[in-house]
Length: 331
Ligand code: PBG
Ligand code: ZN
Image 1 (cartoon, helix red, strand yellow):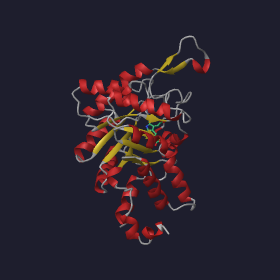
Image 2: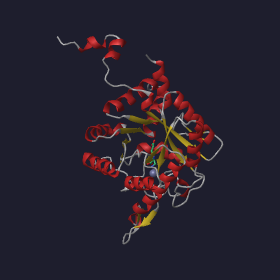
Image 3: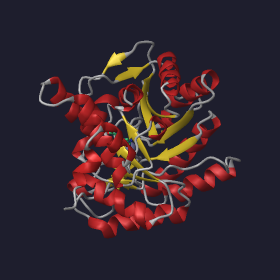
């Protein structure tokens, strides 16, 4: 009889024959930075905080100590306006935080999320414009081409502040090409673009929007983020467009409900694929664990392992610090 159980008999045998490996070097730790001197809890994301610049520097140092080489920064500005000025301001929160982190923790890889939604007063990922001839809810949309110029300006200002990687998340058509051209024009030919290539209009972003105060005040993001029921054709098209425009890595977001898409991109493209284990996925586990319904440590490590098995080279995850600690404790 063929007995697969022989190789499962002891921890050593299981470890010896394992195909999928989880390591802190694959994690990207997200940090929310606000323009305050305080550190505040985020009600919808237990264990995650909005940090001051000083505390963000400390977070970066801690990540590196745990073997996590990368952080991704999200800014929460004090002042928002219709065109998201603080996203590309020289003294913007991300620009200041990036300079501080790179000065104190030079070994850390700083990834800048490049979008306007945390900086616009209406909460959309670019400025709004009217659609001629239409009325009511269809009479306005996010102005794609006006957004491109602002996203490019944001990327250059982030690179000037010392960001190692630019991560555009606005889902505007042509954003990777616009950012690549602007970075090259400003002399940042060596700065990679980690594109949020395949990003769905998802309910799983709910806790993040609470954290960043970026819930759209009118309408929703379904006119630019992807339809969850869009299928593989749309995912391949978005990934191909970003690859052609010069994306250095592709991303699938959210991760869990889209692991099939992640696996497809892994097989179809010769670019690294990043999984974004988003806020809602994090909060589901935290809530279940707090209620005593599930074991947090086992659930988190199993979830991250599943993303790796599906094909993720790297994972953006709010569990990064905990997972790194748990991995260092186990043999
Ligand atoms: C900004 C952005 C979002 C996330 C990352 N970058 C929010 C959104 O599109 O509403 C979501 C992250 C998360 O839920 O953890 N464009
Ligand atoms: Zn956005």
